[in-house]
Length: 406
Image 1 (cartoon, rainbow, N blue to C red):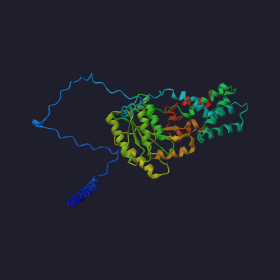
Image 2: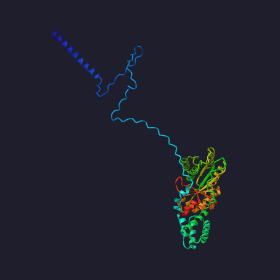
Image 3: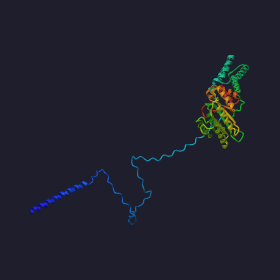
Image 4: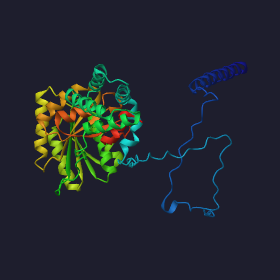
């Protein structure tokens, strides 16, 4: 009996042990896998602040003045923080230039003129210095003048006068021949013309000068240089950019004006030239300017429509008052073709003066004589280079001196 009870007890103990092992293994299987060591530990969020009676009193700390607070020292090798870049300054206004005085400007440019005209002056002196002036020599003299674009009628007049004076003079020393040739050439060029550009209208409104010419003669550049000539003579100027067909013309003229402190009135590209010319004169009156210079579009003298438009510009401008000057710009290198251009322009507008450009680049200085004879108006200005102050008032004596040299 005791043995049976002992066996039952042992069996119960064994069953209990087995069931404990089963439960223990089940619990182990339900545990989550252990996180790897590199996984960061997630901390619990901070407790909410306490308010009211539950609030904890703030601990008092000694306060420091701003002088006692030190800035952290920069670490060695650390790149210093650059200050923010300053905003770019507005472009400065262009510096106003002081143009070269016009008095004697042609004399100062004499050497440049003489280099291009030597073939005329020296050629004539060489021919006149021959011991025997036969018919062949006089024909050579006549040919030299014609090549220089003096023109047929003026050439014949000059040759006849030279023949007569040389015959009377007899002995011909170089100095005498030079003096003789100078006198005759000055007389041919003419000293009785009024060559001053009119800058005094005689009324309260400004003098109005319109600049005309064909394409490529340097018309806009000449207008800008003329502004310098007038400013150098103490005149205030307003520029009218009435050349609306060429995109860069208004910008070019405005640049010339800014250099001498003259304001430019301009309009939209392709706008009405007459309207811009009218506004320029109106602005000149409002500013009390001395002179208004109007640059017109270059046009072919064979285009009737363009020439008619030039006449319209003239009529519109004259609503403010009389047009004091109409300057025709001619390229001296074009020779006799320039005379054809001059005739057509003179039919549309009343030309009052001529500006000969590029005279330093041609040996055809006789065009001065020919164009004056053709139009009956004087050459008032000549261009002798690309420099800003290379536009000079025309002086017959200085011009002839440059032609025949020393």
